[in-house]
Image (cartoon, rainbow, N blue to C red; front, side, top):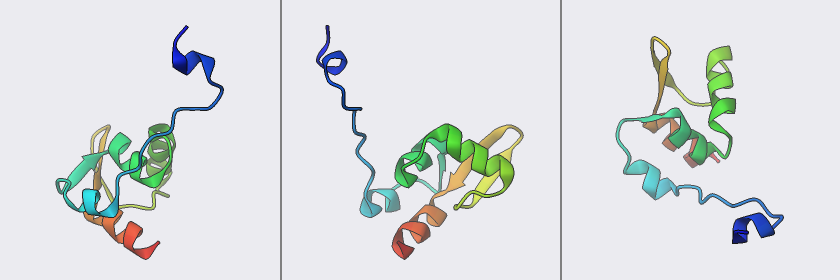
Length: 78
C-alpha cells in the first residue's frame, strides 16, 4: 500500500504565487488558471460556459484559454 493510500488527508497542491503568474505567457489553459483560483478545472469550465468566470477568457471553438493579465488583476485585488 502506498503512503498516499494510508493517509486520510487529500494531497495538497501548491498554488502559484503572484510573482510566478506574472511570468506566465499571455494566455494559459484552464487547468493552469484553475490552480491559481483554487478550484477544479471542471468548475472553471462550468463558470466559463455560463459566462460567470472571474477572469477573461478567449474561446476557439470548444477550446478555452484564460488571459493571464486577468488572473494577475484578480490576485492583486485580493
